[in-house]
Image (cartoon, rainbow over all chains, first blue to last red; front, side, top):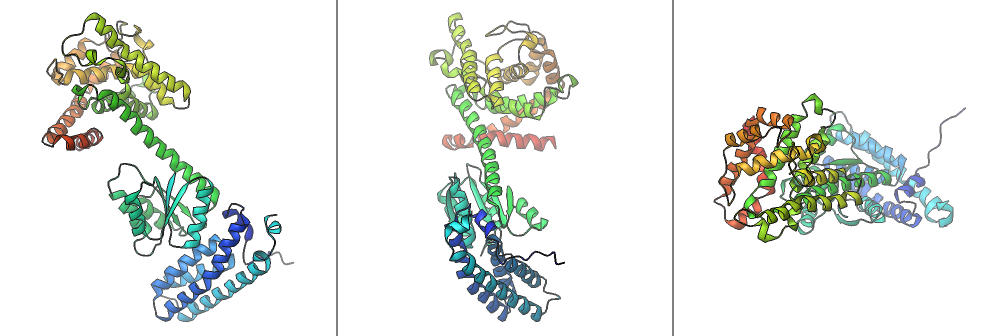
Length: 129
Length: 366
């Protein structure tokens, strides 16, 4: 029997709690997050391409904070891993880093799809209940 | 309350700002430490919530900069970080942060941390207010110099020493010591109700004038008692009332205003009576020269059991050198600031003077 619980890419209840139960405000935060995250991931990729690991690590750290804030938990896990790889430079390979960055893009895609399908376009009453 | 949020990530900043605004705070957001300092130059923010990692100067450096500047009001700093590593927490606290919250933050946690900040800031405000009030009352009598500053130091030392006597173990705890330090400057607050013609009279008072002068104890006591009744949770007001009312009572019952004797006089009143006497005797007044420390000790010894509680007088005599050290440390600071122009000296005294004297005293002890 499979006892593992399938986690959604985003825990809207958590986000809603941080927004003090205000659905419109939570949606605004989420929407801002979706708008700004892909360019940030691109910036991280470009910093890595230019061997600016320090800058990349700073951006990952920043994005990690926001992913945690909006409760995009699977993306958060992926960014935690990426930050760890970037800060532990001695035995980290480029392949590991780029693999982890790719995974972060995928996780973000999942968050975006989930949010658009389940949250951003649903009536407010359904979400607040 | 005005809160400055230092956060470079606009989404994080927006959520923190929203949470704080909902509970009625006025929030300003800065996205760098440099901009935060600019805000702090123009406006007083009792609380600063800062992200750890910022572009340019980091949160811990900002913390240090805030602590290094000279400001009249304390700034309570909360660090906001997604780093849970104890090393970072220690660094932040070492840099001068008061508290920290890990990201992602929970609004309830933020509210309670802010409430803790408010509690601490209100204590600071309370202490400043009490002392300012006492100084205001004292300001009419320009003869007293830094009497209040010395008095509270004597009271604290006397109380701490007395607390070592097993008979006072139960009564004197850290809170009692702190309360007497806080409230002893209010002992003469009732003098605001004494006319200038009596308070500032250079010669001896007539019996009628002395009767009016005596009223400062009841005026102060009754005023503070009203405040104490209105705010029963503020226990220090009860002590302030007792001190104002009883610091001229004498152990043998011949004091005023009520002729209380022995332990009928509250302990804080008995302590302040001795500290007040020692300071008055060793200070110069328009009508007399300052007596020497040795002479003051002889007078206290002679008055033991009549004017003063024998236990308190004994502790004072046993540790007389320590009281003399406090007295002389204030004198040294006063001598050092004597060359400063009057307005500047006004800025130096009274609070700085008190702290400096304490610092000198500590140095001497070491």
